[in-house]
Length: 305
Ligand code: CP
Ligand code: NVA
Image (cartoon, rainbow, N blue to C red; front, side):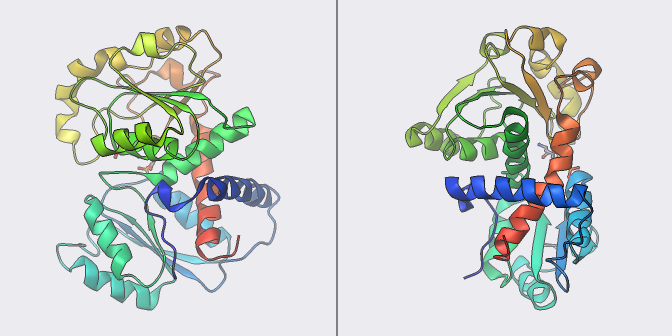
């Protein structure tokens, strides 16, 4: 049966750790410029209904550096769910390509795409979640800390698709995960219940950033208004102001806390120039690691890793 990567929970704890180890291995091959071409003769269709820098560049570069060919299909190319039904395009693409990566608005469309495609489908972000990003994040934390055991990870900002994937990760890997957000901007309720009932991690929902960041190993933030909500960006500023990750907040952790952001960042809103450029910021290592972890995920989906 084909494997997809739609939610972090498509992987077991062991598979997550195997994928991280594989990413380390693949990353060193990249650094050594080894002739490593496991995707030779394969094609990847990349469907984007939303904009992207990292996801597009990392998938296209990674897949082609490993011997394959990636095809970019932008918002005006397919018109998925508009010009053509999701279940039709799923079967059409499956007959041309070996793998599909899709960034869509509606999560249901991605589920439908995976259901009707006969080739593996990777989630490149939906309004609901962003599993490639959070796999990349734990990989980056592993590189910096040397382990992933019971770290305190504090997400500060909007309870969005990034947090939803963190909640799924926390239902599998033990950690102390805190989501600090304004009231009314909480992440998915079902996922919060799931992480609580899993008893794998300690989960806290908070509205007090300065209290919650104490002892944080990682502070993570993301934009206050995600793609599809950009018309609310200005009006949200007032609500989110005390959730800005700035030097003052970082100094309150009483720890050598690392700063992470999935990017793109809106400097001056959810975080500042100072924090982005500080020695505690690992955002560019994090961005680079998108490519290495995704290469490992693709190897796994093709049973090559
Ligand atoms: N982090 C991330 O997914 O970036 P893009 O939106 O640029 O792909
Ligand atoms: N929450 C952001 C993540 C971007 C990678 C968005 O969906 O726009």
